[in-house]
Length: 251
Image (cartoon, rainbow, N blue to C red):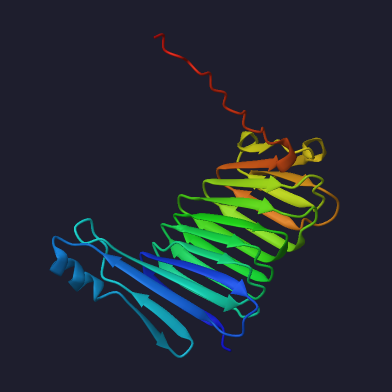
C-alpha cells in the first residue's frame, strides 16, 4: 500500500486517523451556497476529489461570502504508512500515525495527536497543536500564529524543535525530566509556572535570552519571538464549581 499524499486545495478540512487496517477508507463531503438553489449547485459541481497515482486532490472554486464553499475529507489510514498533506486555508488534523508525517497549510490550524515518527509541520499565519511523547518533530509557524504543546510523558523519546513568531505555550506532565532549551527575545517574554521552574537556568546568547533545564544537550528546543509560557498539568488551577441558590417567589 503506497504512502498517503493529499493536495487539500483551498477551504478543505482534512482529518486522518491511524488504524490497524490494511487499506484506506476515504469519505468526502462538500457544501456550497449561492444566491439561489441553481447557483449553489453550480458551485457544488465544481468541488471534487480526484485520484492520480499516489495523490488525492481536493479542488473547489474560490470561496467568497456570496458563494461560500467548503469540503471535508476524512481518511482512516494504516498507521504505519507515511502521510503528506498540503493545503491553503485548510484545517488539518492527524491522529495516531506511526510513520513520517509532513503537513503544511496557511491561515488555518494543524492538530497533531500521538504522531510518533518523523513529523514536519508548517503553518503560515496559523496555529499548530501537538500532543505526544515521542518522535523527531519540527514545528514552524511563521507570520502571525502560535504553537501549543502538550507533552504526555515524563521523558520525551526523540527530539522536538518548535518555532513561532507570536507565542509558544507548553503543558508538561508532573515530574517532567527531559532537558530543554527555550529561547526568547527578552527575558520578560518567558514565563515558567511548572514545578521545575527553580531549576531553570538563564543566559544571554546572540542577542536573545536562553532558558535551559536539565543536564546535557537539550532534547526539546523552543524558539519564540513572542511569549513562551510553560505550565505543569498538576499546577493548573481547577475551575471552581458553580453554585446556584434557589429563589422562591412569594405567593
